[in-house]
Length: 154
Image (tube, rainbow, N blue to C red; front, side, top):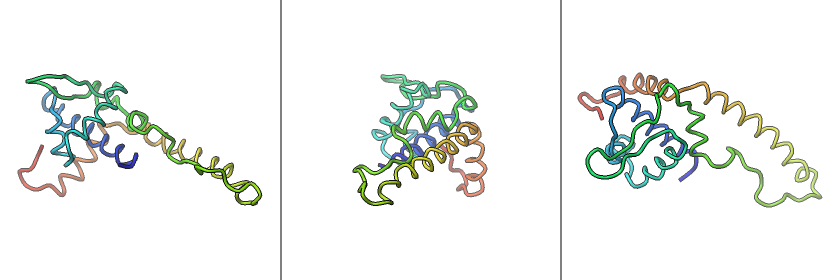
């Protein structure tokens, strides 16, 4: 799965946990989270593991009450925090093999792209840092309520 997809799933997971925490602060099992995301609980646990390692979620193992919940308030978790937790490499990467150094374009393409990529990633991270999971939940609920099926809520 693409890194960007894992990031989107991580944002969905945290938004759902934040939404549920507004009603009741409890650990929620992977299968309940997976129902909202519409994917396998096993797959979600890998992403949740990354989020736990970054200190964004807490896990409780074993039996009744096992599951996941936010480690801190949704207002205190930025989208950048999540990005840094699940995206291990830079957003853009250069060639995996060295371009032809005898070619004028090949010789200069990597330095030219490096500048553009670095500036783009800085701008993206600034935008993500300015948005919290709580704000994402609010926005998601606004869009979702306009399109929701009656009586359907997780």
